Length: 214
Ligand code: ADP
Ligand code: AMP
Image 1: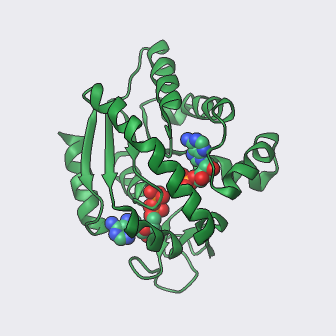
Image 2: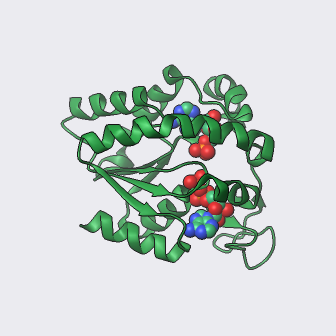
Image 3: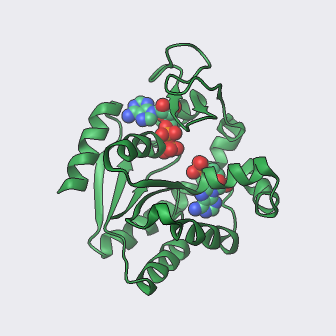
């Protein structure tokens, strides 16, 4: 099953994908994390992506699409995967449709996690991520048991540089602009499902599980 989690930055895609991964065994593919990993390792792709990621702009399609298609052809995506952060625009959506079709595959479901923009700034400002296992926390909504330490694996938590308010503004603006055409694309294919991402994390997980099982 190929599932796309759509939603603005901070909507809860990563939080929910981590939970669904444990429930379904589907791989969690996140382009943001692929870029951050390449930047940390200093690869050529990372060097090209870095200025875009740091300023909150979209990395150009000619870099992003190839990276994502390579990733979903890895063996752990053989049964499908959950896409988080991709596609971010119509060109990416069309490239994904074409590439999957060439392999006799297709997107099964697209779930839009709907959260108003006003809520997102506070979610991103309070977000803490785990370096070890990728778990996501929030200093108020979902605090770890010990400040700065991951409950799951004990690794140190960190705050993303691009979660600072100035970059967040650019990220939200860029993503809001691209969202409606993307929603229209998947609505037109009859694949768009929508859930209320303002509910608490457990309630969102339940709703997501229900729409994916339907
Ligand atoms: P995304 O992957 O869509 O950018 P994240 O999953 O990283 O979003 O979540 C962004 C922040 O919001 C994190 O700090 C997370 O703990 C918090 N969060 C996620 N889901 C909820 C929710 N349903 N209610 C309140 N806070 C949430
Ligand atoms: P995210 O972790 O999804 O918030 O993404 C972090 C950053 O990575 C974004 O602000 C972009 O610079 C870049 N990025 C992630 N996914 C994409 C994508 N599909 N297309 C272009 N840039 C992306």
